[in-house]
Image 1 (cartoon, helix red, strand yellow):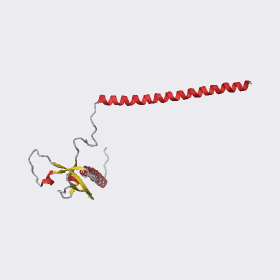
Image 2 (cartoon, rainbow, N blue to C red):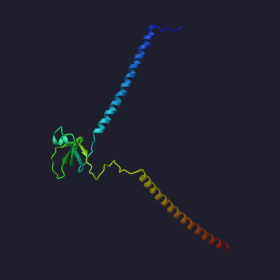
Image 3 (cartoon, rainbow, N blue to C red):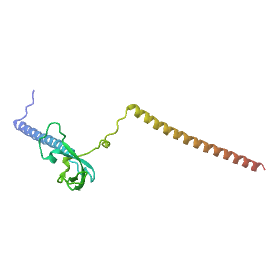
Image 4 (cartoon, rainbow, N blue to C red):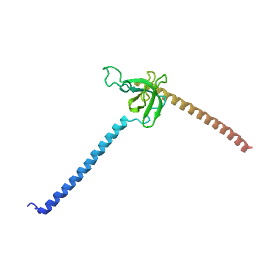
Amino acid sequence: MALEIPLTKQIQLRLEELDGMDQRRLIAQIGVMKKFQARMTRAYEKISRPGAFRKGELVLVLKQLVTGRHHSPKFTPNWEGPFIIDQVYDGGAYLLTTKNGEHHLPVLNGRYLKKYYSQNQPPEHVKPQQHPEEDFITNWVEAHEGMTQLFSQREKVLEEAQTLVVAESTEDTSHEAYLRA
């Protein structure tokens, strides 16, 4: 015995189901748009560096802007410099000078600049390489120094406590002598 649903009720159920599907599609589309927007935001933030450079910093300039040539031989460097930032303008524009103080370049956008690191100065985010054994030894030495400080403090506290006990015992005996008299 199968339940028979009237035709009007079947049509109404199908229409409600289609409305629900439209709603689910809209929710899915909004989710996709939010993911796309987040992806575009990450890509933009990766490229843009507002206020990345300060006056007096050393930077490299994309060679294509300096020479004006789009094509260069295969193994030539892509960056030229170092140049010194002479002035910082709003919107991420910079005026550069050479080490001699000459202005050879026009005002450039910051996206065509890259921070220059001399061979003696590693980047701030790069820590000097240490071997795990050295890390262990330095950590052990620091812990040992801390423990010796704690023990010396403990010894000082014990000595102070002993002097207090001795002082109290001498006071008790004098007090007892007073009571006996």
